[in-house]
Length: 118
Image (cartoon, helix red, strand yellow):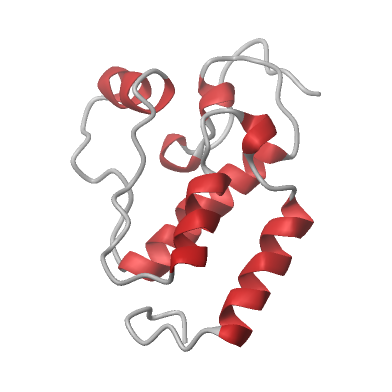
């Protein structure tokens, strides 16, 4: 477990809540970021574009558990992957290797016609 005592390192739009809150963290912060990047690929939009104030954004992510809206028509297993990757409780997020294995399985088993991943 790591903890940044002085300031949050990284880019807030992709930063896990525990980093913004200066709490101890582990590799699950990267799983959170992976979920945000995966959402960007699927939606072809920047995350949290409606936020312009850091304090409001931080409150929305850390306290209200706001996450990007998942587009309609997405494969249910991919929806589950996104939701688990950016779960507010890091212990509920997939391990990095599990997230990648699940994504590979989804891509191999589902045509995902509405998803620009293919």
